Amino acid sequence: MFTFLDLLVVVFMVIAASGLLASCLMFLTKKPVLRKACFYITSALALYVGYVGVRIGGSLFPVQSAAGIAVGIAAIAAVVMALTGKENEKKFMTARIIAAAALVIGIVNAFLL
Image (cartoon, rainbow, N blue to C red):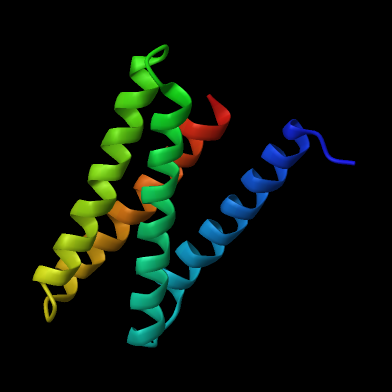
């Protein structure tokens, strides 16, 4: 029978594995449709992990809450950058880097600190 700490470890492993898979596919695949799908999955996971960081931080840990908000803003900024620069490959590459960095920082903020 699982305790809540066991469930937290399972949730962390699922988010970390899916984030790693989506981030790797986002940079390694040649198909633009799969690249965009992985980008949006990575951005959505970064947004969710930012929300988790804010919920965990609450009012007791303001630095963790601020980091969660910054991760969420970075994920939204990456999506906006990708949508505004549809034909510009450099903007899309920058947006992918921002989304991947936001996901990594969000996972570290929410689950490891």
